[in-house]
Image 1 (cartoon, rainbow, N blue to C red):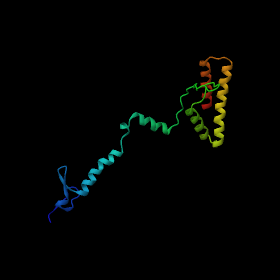
Image 2: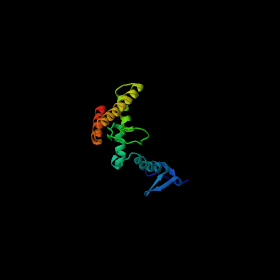
Image 3: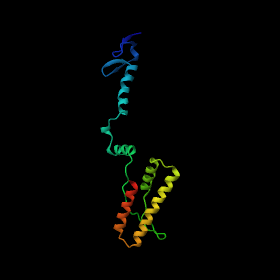
Image 4: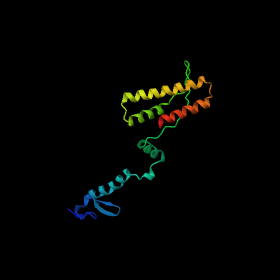
Length: 149
């Protein structure tokens, strides 16, 4: 049987097991190793190629970002509803902040409920005093900002 040397690893290999790869006669093992190198480089993508939206998601998962205070939220009127309440995102932020401070789960739930009741009572009082919607919204945002800090 006719044997030749692999040009990469310099081993004697049968000619039928040699492959011409980029102008060289190399064995199948060397060819597999060389073809795997670009695949490995695909999985280590540099950060400059990651789109901006994915970068923002990665950053937001690492750091707790303050929610944007939306203020009033008008609900469908089934009965007398005053229309100001915390959004789900704002409640989740208050919940996470209280847990990070070391409160137990039941205490956190009570605290968030108390905060939402406090804000809804504040809105009722301001409406009874015939304040404008703009001023009610401003007061609501101020009180929520105090709860966050």
